[in-house]
Amino acid sequence: MNYVMTLLRTVIGVCCITGWLSQSLYGQTTFNAISQKFEKYSQLALTEKLFVHTDRQFYVSGETLWFKIYEVDGSLHKPLDLSNVVYLEVMDKDQKPVLQSKVALKESRGNGSLFLPASLPSGNYTVRAYTQWMRNFSPDYFFYQAITIVNPFRRLGLPLVKDSASLDIQFFPEGGNLVHNIPAKVAFKAVDTQGKGIDLRGIVLGSGGDTLTTFDSLRFGMGHVTFTALAGVDSRACLRDRGGGGGYGPLPKVYESGYVMQLEESGNNQLKITATVSPGLSGAGRAGVYLLAHTRQSVKVAQSHALQDDKAVFMLDKTALGEGISHITLFNEKQQPVCERLYFRKPTQKLAITIHPDKDQYATRGKSYAWISW
Picture 1: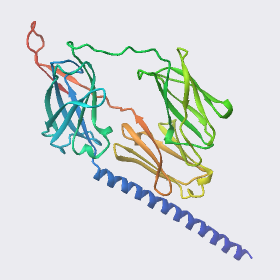
Picture 2 (picture 1 turned 90 degrees about the vertical axis):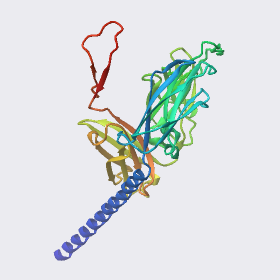
Picture 3 (picture 1 turned 30 degrees about the vertical axis):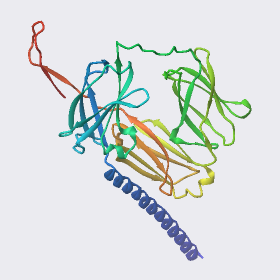
């Protein structure tokens, strides 16, 4: 009898170990495939960035706008000799180009100038620069800079601004989704009719006008609120600014099922990321979820965890992430991205700039020269 029990325990133990190993190997193989696909994409889709340095940001019509252009690798921020021509445009308030120029690049640098004709009306303009390679991607990756041009020979003709208490508010769920009966953090941004941030107080109303929670903006009309959304319930936010104006703002769509990701600052320089899955998806997601963090398309963290009680908790070391903005993406068991958010790590090294003048003393209206090192 003892021999039979011992043999039975051995068989059960071997089966458990075999199942655990197969699940771990499956998760590792799956996640390696995700990392390999991402690295292959990064190699094929090289990120190119442009920086345009104008001599100033305020001009009078009839003056000349001088500029320098620098081409760098978007991942390493080092000089990149990829393109030979940069297309530079000055666009009006309707985002229509009023001035265009082609600038030759040599050793990842270029320079030039644009004459601002007297036909340009006064207003705010945008300098945009891009290359042919950058046109393969979203225009969001182009270089943009705001400038102001004043034409003293033409009347502004600006319409009178009417005082309005209307608000424009946007909500941004952390990770991208609001899912039924799962607590979620939702960031918001409120602006007035002129695009300026407004300090306000708000109430999240549920079905029948019940108050779910209250919130206040932190600064410049931005802040966040945490609440549990319910699918099929007409939820909305009631808003009131400091001046007494108010209104209602619609909340994002609430999905019947899905994934929610929450990031929290933890002690000892740690980030705690909690992935929550709807109970209806827990059966399909037993293989686990995968987390990929990259800084400028350079993979920094790659982890996988099995779900326990429809949750998976990832602990990340902040120092493992690169300085600046990192993308943190959550994948399901089918290697599909389901949640994503950004995290900013403040640079530890400051740029030290030293100016070296050519003389210790200068005469009145005398010429001066200096060079900069860093």
